[in-house]
Length: 414
Image (cartoon, rainbow, N blue to C red; front, top):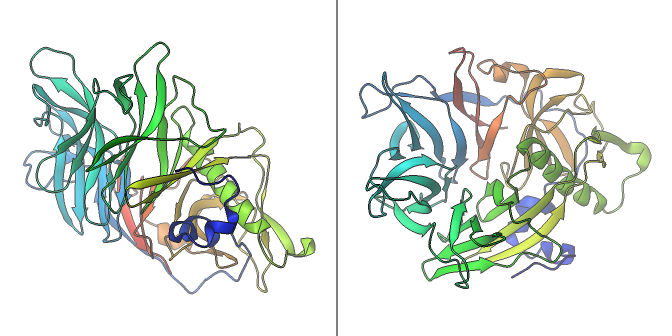
């Protein structure tokens, strides 16, 4: 079901939109929480040994996701003196388990897992992921979407299978997003001349196509990929869009719309530019999707990099503004807010978390909080920022403890 093109009157009635839109953008500047300290800890570093796999160490990390129970799931490699095997790993606290790895027999006859897309995990601990398979019988190797509820991976959809409607077969898949009910969203390309792309939903009742909203179109070669996921909410962009502009424009779309909804409107003399325009970026087409049990509701968002993000001035001294480009963003990390990783334009090496919430822009971390992180001025330091929907966030960043490695960090924000 498509969300109406002007849904602001209904936003407050939808629990999911509260996190993503309503509380996210009522922006103002307040006194930074100088006394508050984040509690950053290193969960895992590349080069650490793999539990229950003697002789293997973890390679680089990517594709990090977290649920409300603070379980995380991520992509990595299991490295030994002779092999580098892609794998998906789950962590519950400091307990790690390998969910799937290269060479594991897949639930497809004559095939084993070869490589993986970014995984997704819901609050029940059910994991969904895409994977390319390797034929063990000499035939063509398929690709597929898989879920792990308990025990071994189960097949959700595979290449060669006819897409809903029966007119074309699946060719390949995006990474998926899994909702609280276990429903799984994924983008896919289908065969044909020309081929087509679409968004699909799997439930225990079967597969169905998700209609795209009016005006949202995909070229035959494009495929939707998730760039943000929190609970039953996800945001998708065409796979040829770089992640930096996609994150930046998603934040702009939410923040600018919310700022325009302030009542009463702020006095222009009491506002400040929190994030400047990015005139060299191309506009990005974004798709918001909310899972309502086993139904998907969609809405198109058009990124506009020419628009600055404005904020109200508070009573105290504001954080140093304007900010540089948004490195990563996550919604719902403080009970219905947006947390972003950024730095000030004047000090690009001073990476910090900022909260855009409750009518304020707060800097949540001090420079000392990132003492274990190797910052990279003018480059992305914080990647794959994710949260439990409350005060805990996890992210991947270069580690100072082991030069040349990256690491997974977890922190509780004030």
